[in-house]
Structure formats: structure tokens, C-alpha cells
Length: 224
Image (cartoon, rainbow, N blue to C red; front, side, top):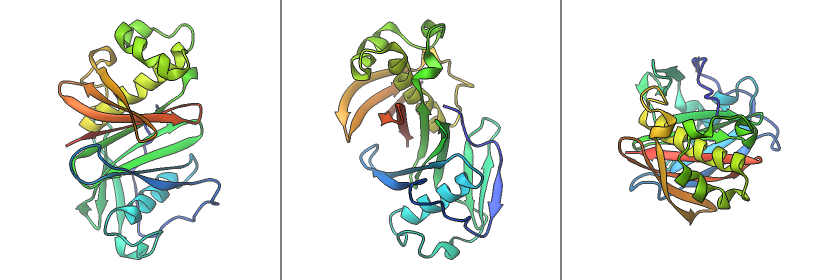
């Protein structure tokens, strides 16, 4: 749920690789839009994690050499942040693929695509326990369909909905600066690629997907 984009960085050299058990291999999410796939991965939320993730995802994009080969050819990799918090990636001084970050449960998640914009968010049920103002963020109809997908647990259902809503507004590049959570509506869930594909209404229709992750939910949205 927390956006991990606060500290811009620039580097010519890839940071040290973590042990295999600490980093999740990049995965491909195809079909979330008509063009290039979304590539996503996670790493422990430690120093250098964002940079490692960006370089690993760049190397996994279609047409790139696999698993770090040709990393030196990437040149200077720089990440900046817009006034509204959207990360912007530059490669050798030129705009790079769209990228998004989220942090939860001690991990940083990143998603990247060459076409359009992408948003990623991870949310945990503990963020939505008793006392959370559900009515300010979720419609009754949303919770009604999300609970059965979340073991009947309202906090888990709220985590699912929040991850999808925040991923969608991140893909738009505005976060919740221009859209109140209650004004963003999640619709039409259906099983898809090990999770659930939905449509998110946030002034326009944004396709999104979520799957269970680390006791909560990981969501990715695509705007193109």
C-alpha cells in the first residue's frame, strides 16, 4: 500500500544481487491491455531494492537478453518522481518504460511495461481492521462481491479492493490526489491468471488484476 518512490536515484552500475531466496523472479502478465505485457517482481525492502528491481525488469522485457545479460548496455538508469508521486524512469537520459512501485509486508513490488502506464499496489488486511472507516473507501456492493473471494473476511476484502483502486489511480499517474477512494469503483470480477481480473472506474475504465500475496493482495492496473 505504501508507495516506494520517495528517493530518486541514478546509477551506472547494477547493485549487488540478493540471495535467491530473497528476490522473486520476474513474472509476465499478458492480456491486461492489447499491447506489450506487464513484467513484475518483488524484493526485500532493503537498500538498493528499487534499483535491483528496475534492472531485473528491464532485462526481462521482450527483446532483452535474459537474466542480467547485457546489463552494462543499459547505461545510466535514473528514476525521478513527478509532483503527484508517479515514478519516471530514464535510460541514458531518455524516457524509459513505465514503472510503478509498492511496499508491504517487508517487500518492495515493482511493475513495468513498454506501452501505456502501469500501477502496482500491495495491501494487507491488518491495514483495514476494526475501526477503519470502510464506508469512506468502499461501496457496499464492492464489499459484497469481495468478501467471498477473501474467505468471508471484511478486512481481507478491503485489502483486495484497496490494492485494485490504488493500482488503478497509480496507472493514471494521479494517485488519490484527484480521486477519492469511494469515487473509484471496482467492477466485474472474474477468475483470470491465478487471480481476479476486474474493471476499475476512475473517470475512465482501467483494467486491473489481483492475486493473493503474502497474506494480503497484490494488484496491477494498466492504462493505455
